Length: 229
Image (cartoon, rainbow, N blue to C red; front, side):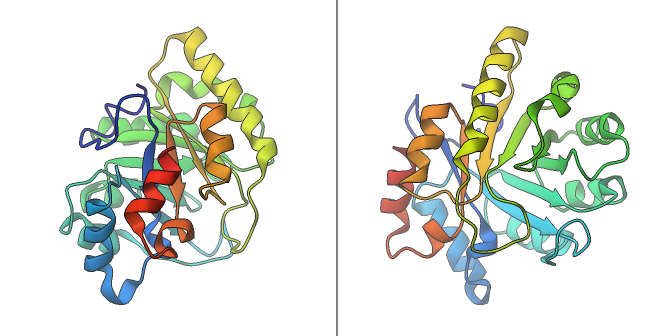
């Protein structure tokens, strides 16, 4: 499957999607416990949302947090850079322990340069689409990426509902991937819960990011099982 080389520690069964708990929704006062809990519950990778307060109206964390999480787990770290001028920080996040580094098509002045930089330093390169950005904007970069991240909410704003209209981009990406014969994982992030995950799975996603649905639940293992379907 398209996520298999990105998620070598895959715990799910063949044919299922990979689940990436978003640590932004975890209890940071006991981060180590939270990381170990989702790992034990069956998480396949960990998603880390990096926001700079400029590209998106929120500020989260930087490479030091990635470095701390890297010491806590062997799960792949999926680092989503919601920042301007990502080329200035890619090497720092790679050195900190990120396995996948994803940038926004809307935030980079030279997409191909930045994607190739990620790959040249031995990391997997991802490219993100905001809900109002058409898939056509990134098709020329398919040969330079390992992952497409389709946002199903606008990044940086809390409390938004899942936007089902973006699923057409998932379906288009899946078809283009097949036509081009490329091994690209398709990931979705935003408003994913046990109900919306059904729509995402039907559209053909490989990896689902979920934050509050997992960390806000009383049983992480059961929630991950429901998300995986």
